[in-house]
Image (tube, rainbow, N blue to C red; front, side, top):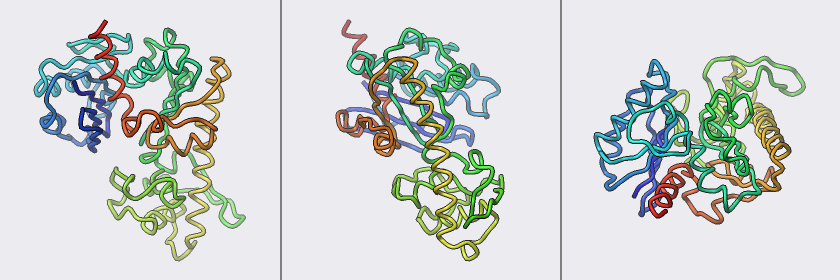
Length: 307
C-alpha cells in the first residue's frame, strides 16, 4: 500500500521505496494523475488541495482530486475529518491530512503536541484531544490556532512584516511578491538550496546571493543599496515574527491540553525542535517525517485493515 498526501502545492507519496515529493501546483493545472502513474498498488489518500483557488468550492476540488486519483488508482480510499475512509467525494475529505497524522501518533505520543511545519503552513495538534479534533475545518483550526498559515518556503515575506528596521530606521515594506520565507530561511542558514523546492518569486536562482537580492526588493532596494547586512536584517525580522506566531500557538496548545512535550515534523522540524526544546520525529521515523500525513494515512489504513 502507498500513502498519498495531495496539497495545493505539493504531492507527497510514501511507499516501500521511501518518500517522493513532487511540486504540484494545482492552481496552475499540474498533472496530478500523470504524477501518480508510476505508483502502483492500493492507496490511502489525504488531501488539502481542494482549497486551491482554481476550484470554485471545496467540494468541487474534492471531486476533481478524487476523480484524478481514481483514474490511476481505482481502489484508492480517502481519509476524512471524521477519521473514516471514503471511496466517494464527500465534504469530510477537505483538509484531513493533519488528522491522519494525529490518528497515527495519538497513542504513542499521547502526552505531546505535534508541530508539523511544512512549506506553506504549520499544524499544531494536541494529540490527547483526538475526539475533539474530529470534524474541525480549516476555518475552525485557524480560530483555535491549530493552523498557523505560514511555512518554511512559500510565505510571502510581506504577509508577516509591515515594516522592518534597517540600521535603526523604521522602513515600511512593499507588499509585492518579491521574497518568500524560503529566501529568509536560506540566507539565515535554516534550509539548504536543495530544500528550496518551490519556484523563487522571480523564477531565479535558489542561492543565498539570489535570495538576498530578493529580500532587498522587499524594501524596494537593490542589494548594492542596503548590502547583505540589510538583507539579513529583513530575514531576521521576518523569522522573529514567524517564530513568535508559531511558538505562541504551540504554547497555547500545551497549556490548554495539558500536554507535556512537543514533537516536530516537516521541513521545519529540526529548527523548531531547537526553538521549543522538542524532539524531531525524524529521529524515530526517519525521512518519512518530512511527508508525515502521507506516511500516517498509510499506517492508519493498514492498521484498520488488520482490525
